[in-house]
Image (cartoon, rainbow, N blue to C red; front, side):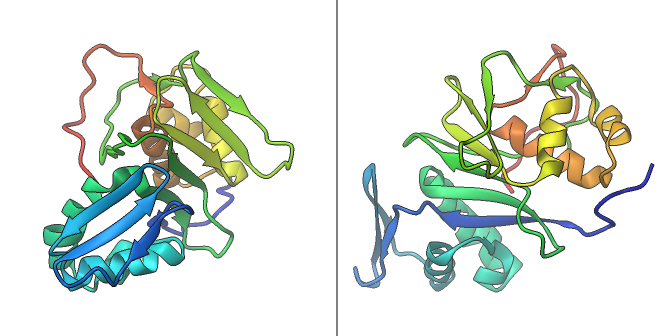
Length: 214
């Protein structure tokens, strides 16, 4: 089966919700972020965190590029952003200049997003409470659920193909084999949908290890 997107790797992008305003002038000891849910304060943010939030306010960024090093990413940026998950939009893209695959938007002041690095061979599917809609604008598709604090926008057909395949129970390996996409792309799309509460495991005791924040 011909793969439609070549071998372009997926990329994980971070941005702030459009309503978030970052006050960089609050002093060296604090950073204030104002949103629809009020104000969030970061005490003593590192220069890497300040720069990451400045760039995230402008649009989706590769977090590693924004903070300038793996140590700053692991020790300062990720812990800070974990506290601000309700303000952060997570986007899965492809390094092919065709635009993002999907974006996950927070809808609640308690909206953590934890991505599975290796979901394993569990069977997964879209549960019945997930609504799949097409906006009147015709721009992408939207997944929403009363049980999830997130909204997922599927920007490209590749993401919609995966979501529609998940109407029936399937494994990552079976889904990858059934679609004309790179296996990693299919797995990453399912990982984001799972983290956003749009996909559930059919099996009682799924293997694959604990979830990790990416």
